[in-house]
Amino acid sequence: MNPVRISDALRAVVFDPSRDLTAALDEFYAPDYTHSSDGETLDRAAFVEMVTRVRGQIVGGTVRVLDELRDGLHYAERHVFEITMADGSTAKREIAIFGSYAEDGRFRHLSETGFDLPA
Image 1 (cartoon, helix red, strand yellow):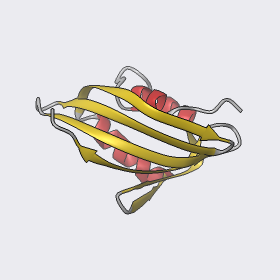
Image 2 (cartoon, one colour):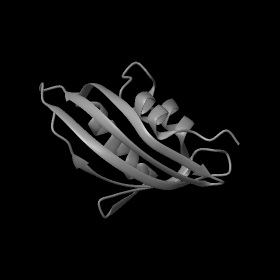
Image 3 (cartoon, one colour):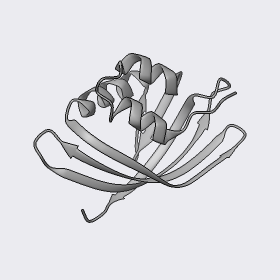
Image 4 (cartoon, one colour):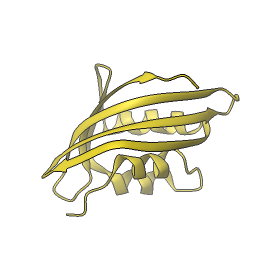
C-alpha cells in the first residue's frame, strides 16, 4: 500500500484545473469514499458534485501541511489553505482532518473541521 496524502489530493483535485478531475478523484478517493464536514456526510457521488462546483469557482490556491500522521489505515492531518476565487475574493482556513484508508491506500473516509484565519 502506498498511502495518499490530502495535500497532494487538494493540489490535484482543486488547485490544478489542467488535471482531469475524474482521474484525480480516482487516484485519491476509493469508490466507497465518504466525506464529513461540519456535521454533514457526503457519499462519493455527492462529494464529486461538491468538488466539481467548488473547483469551477477557484482560480488558485496553496496548501501548507502543519501536522500529518499515519498509523496503519488511520490518517490525521492539519493544514492551512489559501484560495483565490474567480470573483477575486480570497479565503484562508486551517483544517483538521481525521480519516481512514482503503486497503489500496486511497482515502475511504475523511472527517474535517476548520476555521477561518485572517488573510
